[in-house]
Length: 518
Ligand code: ME8
Image (cartoon, rainbow, N blue to C red; front, top):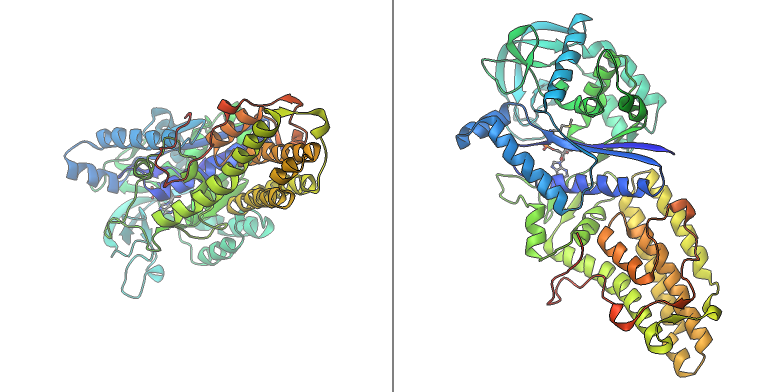
């Protein structure tokens, strides 16, 4: 695999980032960082979705213009991603001029070729979904099943996209490409939804909604949400209806969209239809994640339990986001819902990062200093069974990442750490030292340090700061590609001085704040 293009959903800016947004961006960043360890060319896109009635209404309530609110909130999203070390290559805003121009061209092309038509319509509109709902999909009480709100009856003349024309082609693509939608159980859900699909409204009357991209040649209508939002994945690459850019040609065929379960229909059905109408290939893959709940409850503004990721860093006085990233990454199994609670967060990162991983390195280096003045003697270089396990772990982690199983990959890494802790306990290097079996003692320590080099590379996507600090103490270049990673990284000679040894992660309840480079 040489190239890799990953996108996240673009977040609505009618609020500031919450832990669900953060979960998706962290998971995406971890996947990207892992694939940077394997591929030559990785491109990572995120951004904000800035048009629509929700944004127009919220700005009006605040007494500011929608653009002012978008600017303020988009800045908050960027700040949050910087604080969480989400290292995107591009941040697109749907209010960017270049994006708006291309969306207008896409709309015009689809209109001219007859895939978009004008039609008078009365429908049930959910502003939460930013879309019309099919009465069949409502709850028994007539509520939107996702937002649990009564949709509004709207009568308008709108432009419609001829989605039904592409229904069979979309179903065929999903059936013929079982790995198009991950996890696979989501594909079944989409095939069921396809059965009832109708043409979709892709514009709104300006009289009702003004905050959108103008339809060229029709001053009464604005392009509505989904053509605008979904197109970001290609407008960001400089796609143009007449002349697709080099960047588009380079990355589109390797595109992967990371999205939440609530927007799967839009990505698997609407977006596929639009792409087919444009004569473009469908994205390589959709990875559909679950939702993060708070203390087992659905997060919602009305419950008042919405948490900001930046506030979590502040509460725990975390100067580096690694612990939170690690927790988020391991909070949910592939595609399933996960949970955040303060108690669980503290327990999990204290156990895995401080007690098991951090202490192991710290104790081993401290023994090396105590018994050998920090020196690895040539006779310490040896082999142990654990090296095979470490090699297997590298392969298992790769395989998990191929399937977006980042919780499972994280568990593999910690399981290697735990086996290494057991190796130390079983071989008791402190007893070997006492018994003056110094070569054996040194061998145990050197073996552990070899494993820790591997651990630092594997944990790097989750905890980049901690991993870099581990590698610094191990005098090991962490920027190694995974394919070149061997179990022979500790060099003979002086490895470390006493005062260079620092805990790589302090327990969350320790009295010290966690310091480190950003
Ligand atoms: O849907 N847990 O924006 P959005 C995990 N603008 N993920 C969550 C979540 C939670 N509790 N709540 C939301 C939109 N998300 C559109 C997307 S893409 C062309 C347009 C996820 O701000 C959600 O599933 O409502 C989506 O993937 C992302 O956050 C943005 O949600």
